[in-house]
Every structure is written in structure tokens, then in C-alpha cells.
Image 1 (cartoon, rainbow, N blue to C red):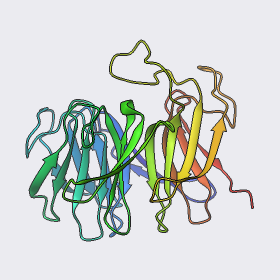
Image 2 (tube, rainbow, N blue to C red):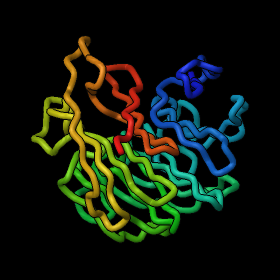
Image 3 (cartoon, one colour):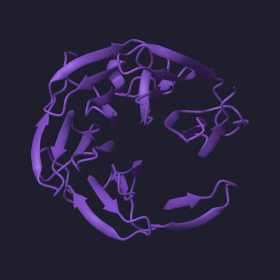
Image 4 (tube, rainbow, N blue to C red):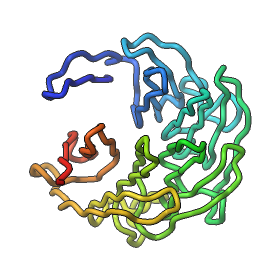
Length: 257
């Protein structure tokens, strides 16, 4: 389900307990609507904050790679003008662009290691100037594009990027793990991760801050440890919220001034 908590961590409401098969990333658009990416159902859906379904992109339970199908999509970014960009990453290797009415505009990307190619585009955000940042996870880089799909830049070999978040000041936060050799799971670099890292970048790709967090032991995770760090978000005070897969929890890290 989608769960809403107040600042005291009290659960205020939830909805969608039977709607989702594999909720992967959740975003808000400028109007406050909730966008949820369901990787297993192959759809991206828009809801009101109360849980009313407004729009579905993709065809439920039917994988593909065209204007009306995704294959295990991973994340979504919505511009102030209402354009929607989907990282279609687990089954495909592309970014799909839709206009504010939900009409398919274009796509770009294919499997590979070159500029504009992907190996698991796992997360996507858009800055105030309309530039798109894509966590090209298994290529150990963040790629930067304009909204026409033109390659602008890449930030390579700093960390294996799992999740992205961007502030109103265009600070790009990335969470994941340090670069490492390929593991036993095919096509998924850093599984299991050797450590847990999150960092703040400037729009030009400069590392402004970087933290490491102890990696927890499966089933024995302690407060302040992370185990398969997957998602990151910040509040208006600069506090960092981190969600880990194996730890099955959300933790708040308080900004130290």
C-alpha cells in the first residue's frame, strides 16, 4: 500500500493494499498527485493523494517496448509542464517520454555502455532547467540528458546509483554502493552491495558531500545501518530519509549543522 505518516511518524492513512504487484518508486507531481511505478505489473499510474486512479501508462500485466507497453519500469519524473519521463529499466533499456495528456512522444536508449545507452536505468529526476538525470545503475554512472534525449554529460565510477532525489535548489542526491565487481546475480551490479553510500552532487556533477553507512547483516539490521539501500528523499529541513530492501524499513538521518 501507499502509506502516509505525519511528522511524529504516526500512520495517518493508507490505500492501495490490493492495487500493486511490485511498487518500485513513488513520486509527486507539481499538483501533489501521486505517481507510482509498478515493476511487476508493467505500468506507471497517477493517483490523487486520496487514492483515486487518474491515469495509467502502459498495459497492465503485458510487457513490451513500444508506446503502450513497458517491461518492468523503474521510476518516473514529471516536469512542471506535465511531461512524464519513465525509466523503463529492468526489462528494457530506455527512457520513454509522454506529454501532459499521456500521449507518447518518443523514446531513447538501448543496452550498452556508450553515451545514451543503458544497463539498468533505475531512477530518474528532472531539475529546474528541464535536464534529466538517470541512474544508469549497472554502468556505474549517472547520465544527463535534455528533454529531447540529447546526451549532455555523465558522472562515472563514483558509486553504483540505485536511487535519485533532487531538491528545489537542484542538488542531486544519489544513494547506492561503491563500485565493485559483478556478483552472482546476472545483469545486476552490486548485488549484494559491499557497502552503503549516499552523496550530494551539483548539476555539473561535482561531489559536494558523501557519506558511508554501515551495512547491516541480513535479519539483524541495527538502527543507523542499511542493507541494500534503494531509495532516498529529503525534507525541507535537509534531513535525509533512506529506505533499504533487506532492512524493510525507512530511516531518518538528521542534518547536522
